[in-house]
Image (cartoon, rainbow over all chains, first blue to last red; front, side, top):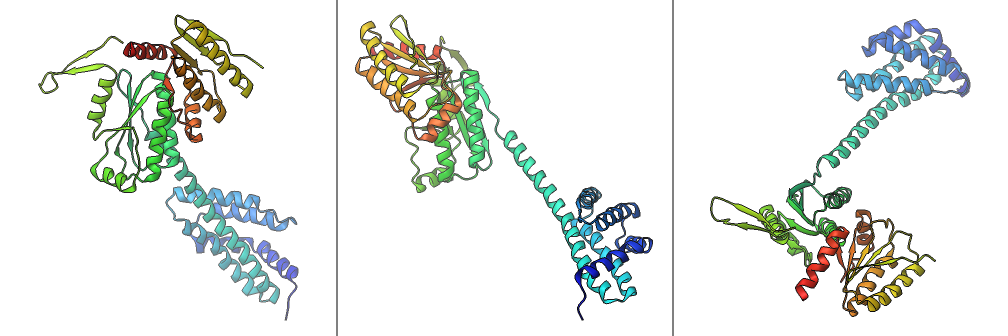
Length: 278
Length: 121
């Protein structure tokens, strides 16, 4: 026996609309959510189902709001989806009581609709999470690239964490801008906090150094740990005539010497520093 | 075609590029500069590109060419005031301006020329 699809659809919508109070009560019982939320949802669903164009924008809006609110209350996204799915069970009881083939066939259609809505709450949840992660990545990018002034005319960038193209771009731009703003002729890029250097990272570093050189500043790379030196040599990366130092202290002393500052009595406890005529 | 003015300050020639350079202007500048170096006996050339926001590979090569030409005429060329964005573009283009001296600003460029000549003389 076949049942025309639109007849089945009409019947289940009728059932849905006619048994409002009972449905809501059962739904509340099954899901354990607040009746007010469910009533709003029910009302939006009723409007959507009664209209001919089947516009579920309001329902989706309500669901998105509900999903967000429940996450804040500490519910898992599965809980929220289950809340929506429990409407099926509530309506199934009504369809079973009706017993007609239209009602059962229509229930299948309605069930698919509810599935979509349940999945939509999950999607909302993921989208919200995704946005948070993106925001945090951006904040991390800003946080993790300070350019510090070590001395008059010497700036340093202590790099911490993994270097990728996006970060290197930010570091490069920030460093070059600082060189211009402060008129510094020496820059130290300290990679003590960089866990690994591969060909790509090395390429990024080289680009930064060459760009600084183009602007008329000298770059020193410091903080190269033994394993990293090993990796760089094993990979066959050529640093060319770029000055590299083992520690930030070495790099600073090199840059000071280059900028004409003389450090005397380094071996004694007292350190006297004299700057040459600028 | 716009011509870039060349200013003389002591024995240094200063070229401040404040227009959008097209290929014709670049070629004219190279010729004018060579003429000026010979006629004034300048020992140094400073090209100020503080106002230049866009460079392409042709202009990038211009710096190297000018540096090579002036060196033939016993004058050092310093490019000063390159913006970070321009530097990044040049690096991405794979131009490292070999043989060209660079300085952060005009003041440091003049100091660099004095230092170079002091070392030579």
